[in-house]
Image 1 (spheres, rainbow, N blue to C red):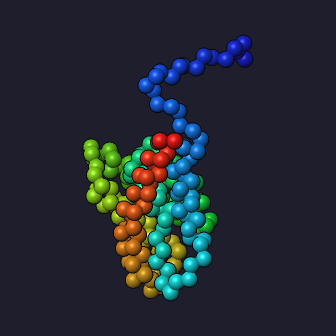
Image 2 (cartoon, rainbow, N blue to C red):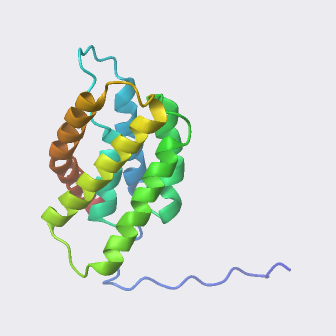
Image 3 (cartoon, rainbow, N blue to C red):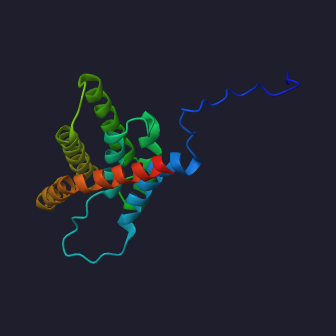
Length: 176
């Protein structure tokens, strides 16, 4: 049944915030996807210890503003990362979703968080994803544990930079 006239839209008050634009709503997902695109950059390195920038961006946005992503948003972003990074298909989808579940559980228990707690939560999530991803991607007999430890340390130490970038982008997004 079609109505003869469209339903009236509620008017926005003078102090109500302006509705967010499409680009403003898509910016967190686009930055996570661009972070995953970093893995295809042709970098010549003797030791492959590039941090998972897509995961760092995802954690930066999720820990800073929990309303940016739905709980299921880790699935398509993880699929995009799996297709680009060369990891087994579904590994980032599973691990990133498990990280989202863990962050939701932590958010239910903690009333307030500061940056140090966010860094600790991100450190656990990064370490979890790298260690379990290693067992998905390489045989157990492979000697990659030292490189994995170096990659985890570099990733954990670069999280504050990525979190600051997410905060800066969020400020630009809100002001636009």
